[in-house]
Length: 212
Length: 155
View 1: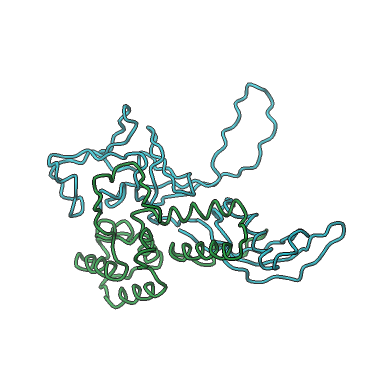
View 2: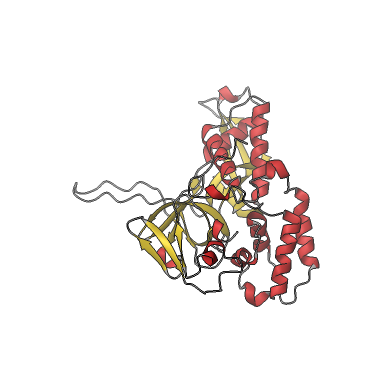
């Protein structure tokens, strides 16, 4: 789920930070620049892991900034394909279920990746998994499903903790688009920079309370 | 900015959790404020990692996860000598992060589990995981396991 990425970058330390220890000034600088940012095809940066190498600080002409070349490693959120992760159900629609973790919100499970016999209840705005009665294939100790005997309705309630498997990822560059030629042209929708598509089809996936 | 290596290493959730707590503790001891974006994100990541039924939810009280258990689990799984195939690195990582407590959950992590491991072997894997990493305690407050996220008495 988390990886380390090795990066080389020029860190510019402002004169007001000269009071800090230099490694601390570098650390703050890197964290302020990278933390909570998505870089295309890399992932969501979390925080600095360690500093591998730094050059001498050089002060250029014109400003008082100390320029330091630094090689460092960052903790990055980048789940691999096939990884199983926990998240909460944030929102549901006919297209599928949106999931979120406390720090990352662009996870989507399309309806085609929900278990078979899952239907959308438009009144409740939730997906319901209609488990057929007498089906033994639910992995041993099926709690609620078994008690109710003749099939059961398993609800994907909002805010429920679920397990899902990562299927694919999408990247969208957030570069600004050019000026629009006419006013009635709809503004292009801003897509999330990093979006994960997942699956809850297999046994063991879906709401965690079904399986534990 | 130049990316030298996209994936230098894989981290388990436990390592990230420890690193974040360290970073926060260091800043606190030195009475230093972390950059705003970082402070927010770190709090969110820790909240996520502590969420039930994640294995780190009760790490504060039980301290189940230590650096030793990782080697221990890998060693135990190797010693089990599965006939057809071994558990690969990514799967082991995923086992640490999810801590499957039964074969249904294990099957989501191990690809084609039915073909690679016999049923006894699957049971054995789950046993080893429970012995080394512990398991989710049975929910006593089962009554309110509903959709409302409950705040677990502060700590």
